[in-house]
Image (cartoon, rainbow, N blue to C red; front, side):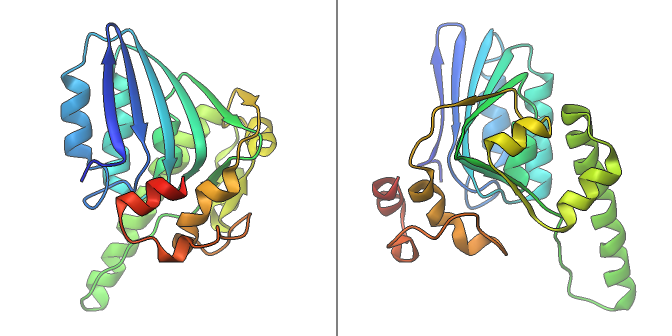
Length: 213
């Protein structure tokens, strides 16, 4: 489904909007990479993100495809860039966000059904995924790995001031009505920095989500 995902080619400029989950039920890496490769001559990419995150590996694939693209990438957080969406955002050369938007980082999650050995094996995989995520943040922000791990362990929400201070973004823009935009994603997280948007729990399809936005 690509209702909330689009790539628009404007001569040598691409406008990319990721306003959905990352992965099979939202923006898949396969679709994203195919569309990006079809526009490999673009000089500028404007990357807009409003996403709760999603599949870790799809996020890595999207991040790497953006990093390998020759275009200059300008990233913007529209409401929230959380979990996998936060490190896709890190592929941008320059990043901005409104003062009341949010970036959220947390530990890698995963699960397995099986015996004890399979569960221990999954824990090892999650540790490796975590190391890769930490490395992405470390390269972009300049923060040390231990600091980043501590932030991820407690599910850290950063508004624009926090994100700028920690090196996740480069500049702050004017405030927008972010509370309404991120309320629809409240069910994905352990904590939320704003109250859920009224009626968000009733949203079940793309049309209702677009109306909420």
